[in-house]
Amino acid sequence: MSNIETGKMGETLAVKFLKRSGYKILERNYRNKVGEIDIIAKVGDCIVFVEVKTRLSDAFGYPVEAVNAIKKQKIKGTALLYMKTFKTEPMVRFDVISIMINGKENQIQHIKDAIEG
Image (cartoon, rainbow, N blue to C red; front, side, top):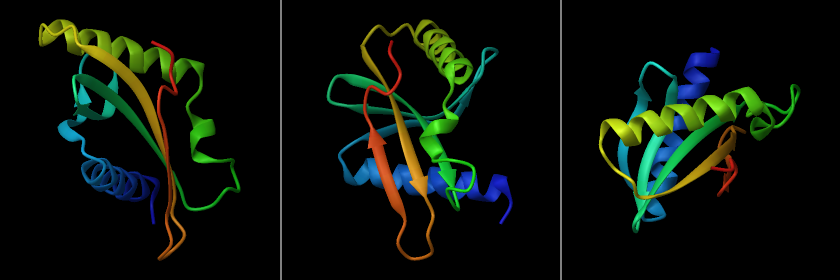
């Protein structure tokens, strides 16, 4: 499985997970001139910007470890432009969903407030 296929599978699993948890999905793979956000969702009055990281093994570290300082800054900048574009100033949160694909038993970890706003 290619990295692109792994990423798409992880994002699909993350969307299903969020929907089961009561989130409304607003956008998938949202892009603007600053960057890209995997999932933008809403829960209650809060807009949640979600970065999804998926791995097939931990040989190169756990998925969440791939969200470094540069990636965090890019996500925050992309989210800020999203809010300006849609003229929205809601409560916001930045989460990471870490997925380890292990055949039939996938491990999904939802880390809320993983990126300080």
